[in-house]
Image (cartoon, rainbow, N blue to C red; front, top):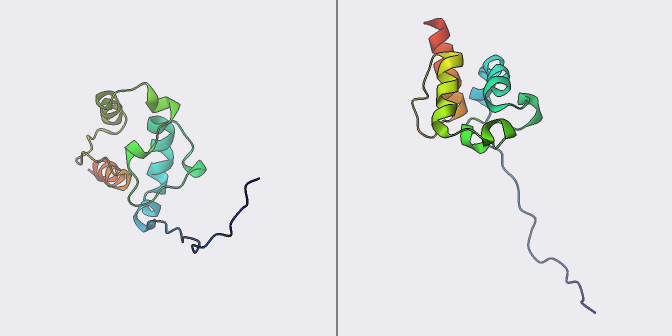
Amino acid sequence: MKKWRKATSKPKKIEFSETDRIGKYEHIAVDFFDKIIGIDFYDCFVSDESSLYDFDSEFLFDLENDEILKKIKSEYGIVPKSEACILVDIFEQIEGEADG
């Protein structure tokens, strides 16, 4: 019979990234998540460091990167400037395009 040992390490603290910038673009994020990612923005945690590639929804699963970028261009008139596709940077671009 296997004996259980008491854990000797301290519990690890989870630290979440900041959300200050993403909060500024909530109105854009809600629409973007619905149209591009295919999930409800409020059903997940999104930080200022979150990338489009962090989300593996069924909606995105069948699309190649080029197709996703074409869809963003079609819906919002922008092509993400960063290859990392940081969401908050995309939302800033969308807002800038809207303010034109």
